Amino acid sequence: MITIEFNGSAENLDSNANLLQLIELKNLNPKSLALVLNDQVVPRSRWAQIECQQSDKIDIFSAVAGG
Amino acid sequence: MGELTDTQFMRYSSHVLLEDMGEAGQLKLMSSSVLIIGVGGLGHAVAHQLAAAGVKRISLMDDDCVELSNLPRQLLFNDDDIGEPKVDIAAKKLANAYPDCEITALRQRFVSDEQALFNTVDVVFDCTDNFSSRLVINKSAVCRKTALISAAISGSNGQLFCLDFSQNEMRQANHLSPINQSVADDKDSIELIDKQLKATSGCYQCLYPDDSQVNQSCSQVGVLTSALLSIASMQALLGVNWLKGNPSQRQEIQGKLHLFNAQNLQWRQVAMSQDPNCCICATN
Ligand SMILES: [Zn+2]
Image (cartoon, rainbow over all chains, first blue to last red; front, top):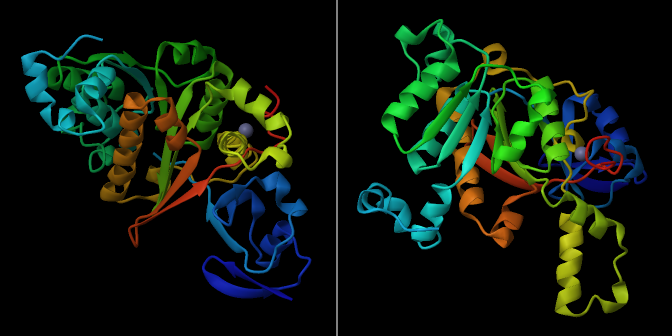
């Protein structure tokens, strides 16, 4: 197990989980979100390739388009 | 670049007094051209602020007419304007208030056929209210290698960024060259690596691929006027900083995504990243 910070709250996670699995674990729709890993946006196509690491700070936010 | 007249000096004295602006910065603004796409909540306020700041040429593009439900958040318009084209009303009112500013009204929706316009301006502002227009504008900015300042808000979530596509070829070339760790000690190499890291800001579609499901417009989701105008002011401020900036200042401005939470008034800044598979910016 590793501990990460997801949207500001500490969470325990299987040590080999990738970013896409984390989003699916949370029952979130990947297509409606952008993801920030340690203050850097991670493009959606790479989520499945990046494993979460101990102490990672992960935040998600919704796409908005209004003006 | 000439100098300010006495009247201009007085009019813009609050700018000229700023150490990082001065007369030179004001003159730069006064020789700048911008295109604002979307003249709704964001666009009307960006246009107003840039015209007041002394920007020389502003082209406004929108195909909508003023509606009653626009009035609480689109402060250039009033009851008498309902049913009139937004660009015509905005152009007329701003030209009256700021005679130094040349304002062009383009009464149309942006389509990619219009992208040649991008090469006639210093920066393009995306102030539209829908995802599909944002994708077309992004693609055109990448294609035309222009600077894009894009902002959006729905509900209490605001987002904005500046991306400079004018340096794209150089960036991609940098990105492809391997970082040589053995020479990473000296300052030049560190700066080079820094540049290579910045090479990867990507584009709007790297952030939101075209199959994204997006919260739509302010009229569908709702927004508080003050939250909307906060984002518009930041977008205009990014624009002024961009227009007056030198290349290294511009490098600092671009590639950062600013996220605003209107409920707790918090801003957050994160680095944008290129999607190596992006069909818009990674293959051009
Ligand atoms: Zn891209």
